[in-house]
Amino acid sequence: VARQVAFGPRVPGTANHRKCGDWLVATLRSMGADVVTQQVDLKAYNGDILKARNIIAQFQPEKQERIMLCAHWDTRPWADSDPDKANHYKPIPGANDGGSGVGVLLEIARQLSMTPTATGIDIVLFDAEDYGLHENDVTRYASNRHSWALGSQYWSYFPHVAGYSPRFGILLDIVGAPNSVFCQEYYSLHYAAGVVRKVWRWAEKAGYSAYFSSEEGGAITDDHLYVNSTAGIPCIDIINYDPESPNGFGPHHHTMKDDMDWIDAGTLKAVGQTVLTVIYNEK
Ligand code: AHN
Ligand code: ZN
Image (cartoon, rainbow, N blue to C red; front, side, top):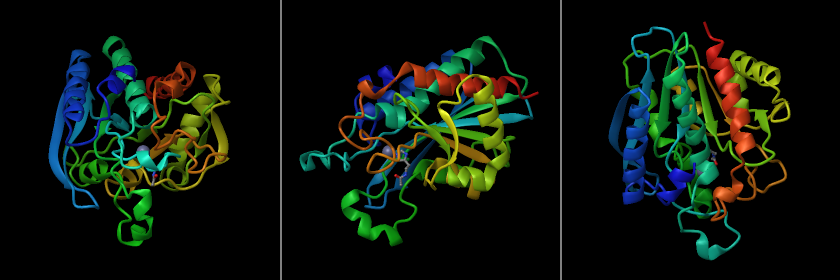
């Protein structure tokens, strides 16, 4: 996570973003994955053309039976939830929002390089998740309901392999804060209840029930929505929900404070160990 943050904000179209993307590709290749990328110009709701890159790392690509793990690697161009209005058009550091999910997946990739699973694994890093509607534009929501998750929307129409149909997918988003609680997100239950139950059961067995709450959470527009509704792949979202905070994702969310101070190794471990337990138990 720190390596990603050190590139600076990973806003599509910037040099930081390009350099971090190159580093992610090289790192995943160094772990033995067969890495392919999708480079595409995507139009944001405000008209910006985003030079986007989805990064797909395939482990044991020859295997038919597969599991997909995903996260977004871009970061938000605007700190539009920052308490200081002067920051509302500045990019966020994106340690938790962006960095954390990718960080967990990089460690999982390292484990896969040492100990193969029975099924194939695809790590999919989506771009352009976080270029969605600015808080100052929320009145334009009705005509911009699909402004988030542009990289995963594209991938869901054009997956890296035609007819791609893994058993299931797991999305990791905002998984690094201390004392995180992962509720059972609404779309995950709607489209992939069996996967939610499986993952939460393994979390309990692995000793992480304090993080994985059996409470139902609200509906979150995130990459998994399009993976489910467009690609037809049952995919859940493991995402921190903090009912105490204004936007539900913690007080640092979409602010300049989303930096390494919000990253807790214990939370990353709880999520990573849980996902590892799930994938190594798939036969
Ligand atoms: C919205 O805020 C609309 N969806 C949450 C998805 C998200 C944003 N994940 C990270 N940043
Ligand atoms: Zn975000």
